[in-house]
Length: 552
Image 1: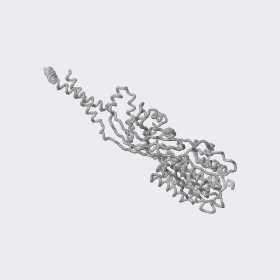
Image 2: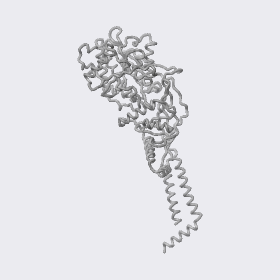
Image 3: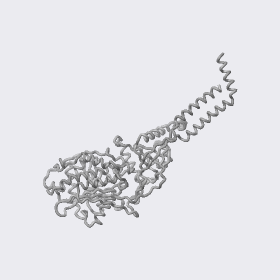
Image 4: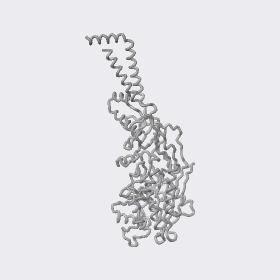
């Protein structure tokens, strides 16, 4: 019957419209959060990082087949080199990476894959904005919804269109800062130095150095635990332990022990370069002018059962560096036989504008030195990742590596091998041992704030960190100096850019197709009502006939 069909259609349309109105989110439904832009810098005439900052786009999952003019939402497992390049190829509007607050539960393979992708992304510049935000409940909810929406793409075309029109919720991502990105050329790099004077007249100098800055895709989220919080921690513990030996004339060795914490290590070791130039080219007197036995650079020492000695040229027999390496081998073989000690020889390529390890800066000035690290490859992704957190640190191995270095230095400086001392003799024990609580507290302090070079002279908490390191130096060392190097604005060694942290608005909205579908439902309902009014007599007659027939 016609009237029954019309009545049924009207009821269904009313229910549909009511359900749609109930599911529609208010227009003011929004959420503001802070995200951190992928770093942007120019170094050695090469451009790195992302050049864009403005984002006005709909959020989509990385699993979507079409990403053009969309903001791609990724978690750590999603961010792979392939997906990053695919987003670039499709001209995605932006990428937003959600970083967990605790990455200890992330599988090791996933961490390694993310580090590789992070390193690849930073090699070249991109116009596509890339942001990183710490995970929270709202962002995870958005991620799950866009992930589910992507999963429906496997359904039929009709089902996908109908679902998109009726139930889908779109998330609009907005970064509306219209200010142009500006170059920053007034960064300062701070290098700290301190000395423990040796016994005798004009003794040779041993330099122990480590760079203290961190590096990663987003500078604000790069704690740099293993690289190079571990090197700084061991250096500070060495300063504390050897200060006790140097405090007594009877135990003071015939070597100056010079400690150096350098900035700009992640950017071609610019702090080391400027510090060496300051000492050799400008200072009237410096320990680097005199008899330098060797320079020991500490870099990434909080993991692994391998220790690699990176050298620019193999040390010649009878040289101080060769003798010290022999002591390293004796300590490892007698006390830590499971640790593999290896030497990696890499010549300094004068054609290249960048160096791989800190000791190469000294090698360019003909000062003998080497870098000690558990990494064999200088391009290892761990040296610059946001996931280089405390969860990547093995404190037992960090302490073990510190003991190996301390014992080897003591055996070399006191010439214990030639004096017939046992190979497994322990110099540092009892009150002279590495303290677990101090090692942990130092690492916790160093990773409490990011140590990115572009932040250390701008943010109060970061400035305080450098000042605290200086206080540690003054606590144990003499002749402590703080060198602050400013760049030449006309010809800077490195150029950073601003807008590294941005407020981002996330809006929950219904797609445009929803409005069209809702308008169609309302129009159909009104059409049915209009038809019923215009044909009321006919419908009423039909209704009376039907009622009478049922009554009989």
